[in-house]
Image (cartoon, rainbow, N blue to C red; front, side, top):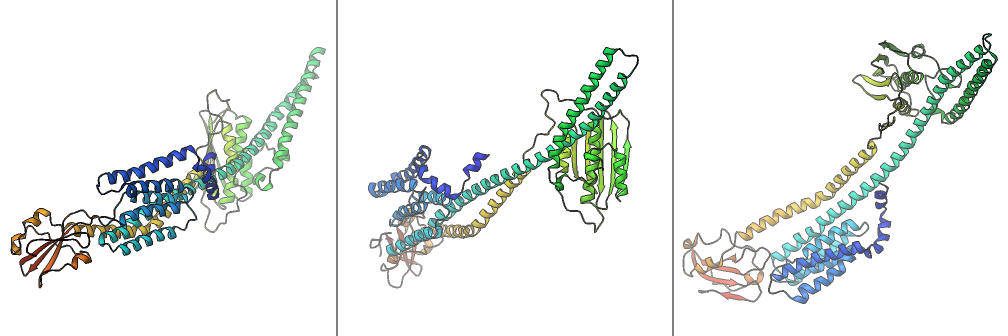
Length: 563
């Protein structure tokens, strides 16, 4: 995960690394492949057209793309301007504005969105569109060129750019989220580790209290036997040595636990304080759960204790764990649900002890105390897991439940079994941050795409209507040949298109027509992006008086019979 964080460095680092990236063999291969694809599209396009010019239509674009593709890593805006210049070659063609380098413009616009952060994108796109509009105005082409300029060229720039921006924003947010999640998880692990160490120190103290007490009894018993008159001298010597060894073991145990207690006392008082700790010296306690509950009742807490089942005496560690579960649960109930009723249930059976502490919801108006650390349950869970038990703490239907299940006898773990500490699942903060990053990236992309998507939708609808109009006014050459000057319109009802062509060029309208005749125009080809010949039919009333073929090139007119 650290490598992923490193990959998501700031924009400044990306820009600094761009110079070295150009020389990278992998990136060089990528640029060569992209250049080959974009140039190959041009080769395929012009290979089907006999009017293609090798220097202008193939060699010049290949050279421009060879500069634009690798240059887009450092100057993505300039690369878009160069690709738009190739698209201007199509606008300079009187036959059709379309050319294959619209694909290059779209690809380089997408790379502009992904690779740039401070480039004046509006300036780049505005310069491209202004140059295209000026070129159309200077060349005085028809509606097809204008439609191509104001719809397809902007769409080829804006939509890929938005996609590139979304890609970049998503990577930045995800990398930032991973970095934040990593920092938070390291902090949480540190806090949880401190809680576990404190709890282990308490466990060690409990071990000292129980084991030290038992060792002291052994030493006392050995001392009593040493004074027995029935023992021989050697036996008294052995018992004296045994008593001395036990006394030394107690001293060593006390010294070791003393060091641990000094570490525990160094913790902040707010985290080490226990609301229900007994007043025994040194923090040790031999009081029972009944005594703990009694002290809570004396403090004004409504608490009920219920014991169920019978079993052998619990080991000191398990008995202490039961005590700590009740103690921590009472502390949390007083802190977070003051005034609530608490019920403690301790059930024995089948070699296990279950402790359930349930508190009801606090009464209305009761104010909870401020949180003082929030890691008591973490330490308690560590204690229970070390003994081979389980702990669950969660809200219930009418309050909060803490349920611990402990074995009556602590057994060492068998080889191959999981350790006492539960393996951490996938961190919750990582999942939440990743989910939030995806939601924010989607929302930003939706907001950034709303206006262009609306414009694109209107443009597509307009293009569909225009395409329908242009395709509905096509008069096939075979049908045109059937028309005879002097015939009446009713004879050709099944031949003539549903509607005439409404956008003839100015030079077509300027062609002379018979006096008093009403002329209609029809396209000769369904190709929407080609400047095709136009048929003109002139009617005097319902009779055809002239039929002409008007070329797409200005100044060329092929007049039909009867003109």
